[in-house]
Image (cartoon, rainbow, N blue to C red; front, side, top):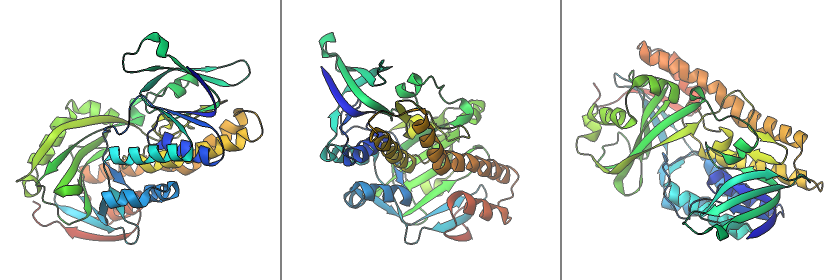
Length: 392
């Protein structure tokens, strides 16, 4: 089976599906290929920032998704002795929404926009032809015989295929080193006692440098509870993520005394933004996790995925409008635009993470520096310093 398109998108997560929508809206023919079939489960902290919601509004899916999610009107940062800083989101609330709902909605909107969805196909090779066009060789993942091999031809490729990106490998670019990776684990709990309704809780601990624990309110009285840490620091712990999370739960009986975990814990890897330029080259643009787009301070990646997917589609549309493909200059312009908006600002936020780690380690959270760091890292909002009831 073969097919010819203007744009070949590998990966139908938020970055790839957003890219497909924007490319289709620009009048380009688009093939969207993913190894999974939708809807499908996807491990995530499930948090959507107001920036992510803004991108979803542009895609036309915000309202129905918000109706199925849990609104979040503020956040609280909690330090080892119970000292805390609260932030109100005001008129810019966030949302907690399971990823299978989010991804399904964006993928179906891509199909409505005109993209051809090829589910259950594993992309195996990205090849550049002599005329500068691209070819993707894929295969069905359901054990089908060799005859079910798929070849797609396109004028460009957008790689939205995650940390182990095939598109990134086709560019000859290495994957992220441990210093530029995060690790996380999450599970759903019932019976968690939240300090405030519709408020996300972020716990900083001396035992978790370069990371934090979270408790996010979810639908049906459940809570998404997880742990995030930079990978190189995690490796030095010699502890599994599950052990770290179990320890956190046991150390907070005021919140988890009557709680029960529903189902197993799930872990995943997060490619963090850094000072290097995002991967791109002639014919190929990477976005989302394939472009190391995750915020190293918070672990947020959905907004970055949606934004970079849009930017990749816009860059491709501009280049293809000239009648050719994406050349080296086009790729460089894309890299610089994405670096200015995502990569470099978030790489700078790693310095805030370092400072917060020192604050926690040296018991400095009661000094004004912590409020300033949280303003820089999470935005000013309405910050209120408090002592959390029930904390030691």
